[in-house]
Image (cartoon, rainbow, N blue to C red; front, side):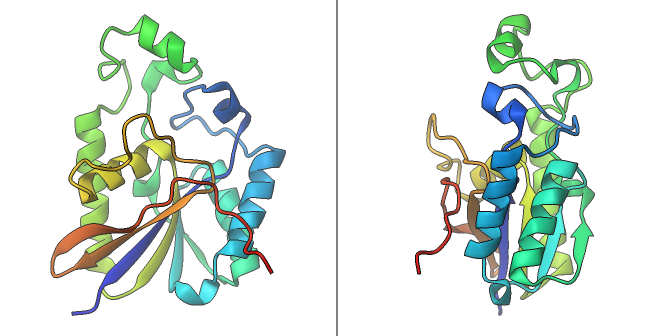
Length: 196
């Protein structure tokens, strides 16, 4: 049985990332650093290693995908709504400290997607990828909270490690083989251009 490979590329940096501000589904654009990170990721990723490119519908992910596609030679980018970031409801726009101070349970913010709901969507996404793209190599562009949840589900809650942040334009890789998902490569650092 051939493996299905999924690359989890996080979008480039936004101004809200710098401020540690909850973005969720607010459509915050890439900043100059984020564009440069996407350019570097596009140069680090070999398009020949991937069969297709899927992206979250939010512009920070779509623009990252567009830049990667230009460098890596993808002709088509498909939007996959399940790659959307976790919604933080009325807490979107707050600093992380404000979010934790304002809500006794950050999982119960009005209008937000709970961690249980996020996990259910992440499982559905994994099932969909395994079913729709068997034996293919799928590069996805998504967001920190969803990627963290996907890593937790496929690593028996071992990754990311406690206190570890996923860098903007970082990419980890999952593998689906014999009905089981696992982490093939965990790389929380921002992708760097390969040295010549």
